Length: 256
Image (cartoon, rainbow, N blue to C red; front, side):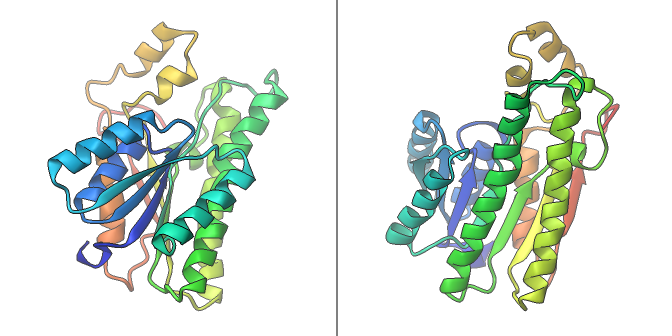
């Protein structure tokens, strides 16, 4: 990770869970990290915590609604003005809404597409353009995916969500191919965790707390820090090594 010290990373969905864990890890390794979310209160607290801990990097909170393309474009412009540009992009933001294919609401499907697929793609495009215009040929784009992007979960209210994660799998491989065709050495990685003990399920089943609690019935789930460690592993691999996809789950996980 030595070569990343002082360089700029953008982490979306940085306020809680996996995003917050990734931000903290990168700041510890000396990076300038822009952490974005719709609400930055928690990121501001995390930035203060990182500063008190004496980490060699810095965390810059940035408020951005990723479902609005104009806000994404403005965010990249602000990063360019203040920090020259992005060297590493961690597309972490994502959401699941319990909407089956047979009875789901179109508005909820659109929301998942907007955040899980379109926002990820816009951030990827803008990050690449940022790297290209500065002749950054060793950047890295990491998509936080899910094992649900490789195997459809046998839960009807998760099927549309799975489709958005399958899209992330395809988009990451498509990105790798386009970067290769462009003769770029920017790397593309997909990290696909199984069940991680974060606020994700509580948000998914906010009206059914008993169902949310039952989801974490395993003796031991993945933790957000486990995924952050996978991000560091991908970033710290030799520049000529392409880590295409990391699939990870708890040893005790029963499905997907």
